[in-house]
Image (tube, rainbow, N blue to C red):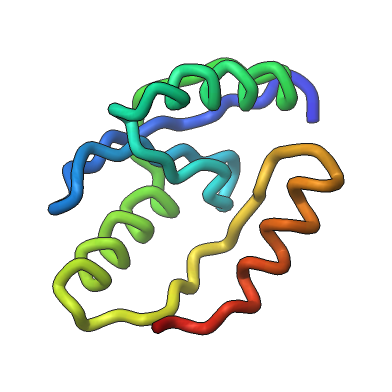
Amino acid sequence: MNGETVYIQHYDSPCGKMVLASVGDELCLCDWSEMPCAERNMHRLARLMHASFKTESTSVLEQAMAQLNEYFAGTRTTFTIPLRPVGTNFQQRVWNALLQIPYG
C-alpha cells in the first residue's frame, strides 16, 4: 500500500463526533474524533499506508454515514460496508474475531 489517498469525512453521531476514512471503495477507519488516541490513530494510518489525507466525501463514506444513522435510529443491527482494516497481523486477527460477534 504505497502513496494512497485516504478520504476523510466527519460524522456527528448521537454519542459524539466521529471521523470516517476510506480508500477506494473500502472503509479503513471509523473512530471517535475527540478521544485522546484519535490523532495517534490517524498518524498510524498514514504511516502504515504511506497515505495522504483529503477531506472529501466518497460513496463508501456516504454509505457508512447512512448505515450509522440507521444504527443510531435503532433500525440497523448489521453493517454491509466493505472494510479495509489497517494494522499489524495481530490487530487484523483481533478485528476479524470481533466481526464474528453478533449484535446484542
